Length: 296
Image (cartoon, rainbow, N blue to C red; front, side, top):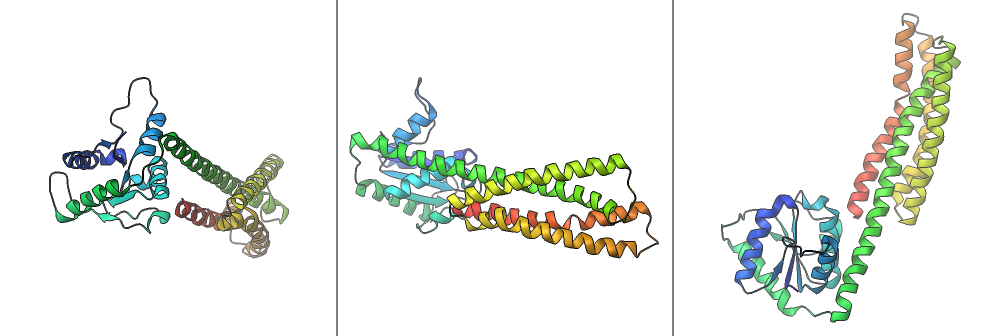
């Protein structure tokens, strides 16, 4: 059992070590996952130590804000009211942790004592002193419950990202193959039967798989009450598909009226017009990914 639990990214190991040593010099016991007892798993030790800790120090950096483990450990500290965050390089903490006062250690380096670092150590010591202990029978259960909840959320986010990626890839394949088939149907170019049939089959397969991925994306987002994901899964694909067909119909008429284009140039121009729809969905996918990261 340790007074302080330090959560950090591996890239910030020197800073974590210096902070641990400074806190130990003040008489506090510190856990910072450097020693895992033989026969124990990493997850078991983490759950027990964070459940027993009186203060959870989270070192935010451009590396740690991307760590699911650091976010989960910060969530446990915040839920218990014992979170003491600090930023090492000016990186903004994830959205839900910005309400907490975060120590600014951007000007501090290990071995260089400055006032902001001393204030930060005092805040940690004060948190340890005023922390309300959790009954021994409940400490581990609280940590396990919270970590399990965070794992569920992270798994849900992963499934949303996978569905988002699949729907975007299928949108590109289906739209470009559709452009090839419509180039034949609208007499933009005269394609061979094999090429036409291959593009037709790819269009049908990609659009079917894309529709399934989009439906899953919308359903997962609805469960998370994630509006941007619902729009990306259920609304924008329909808007993009209808808009894509209209664009290709207009493009076919325009290209047919440009006799100076070779057949290859006409096909290339038509396929480029076919990229507008999936391009629109790709922008939506980027926005969705950023919104998902903000919710974490």
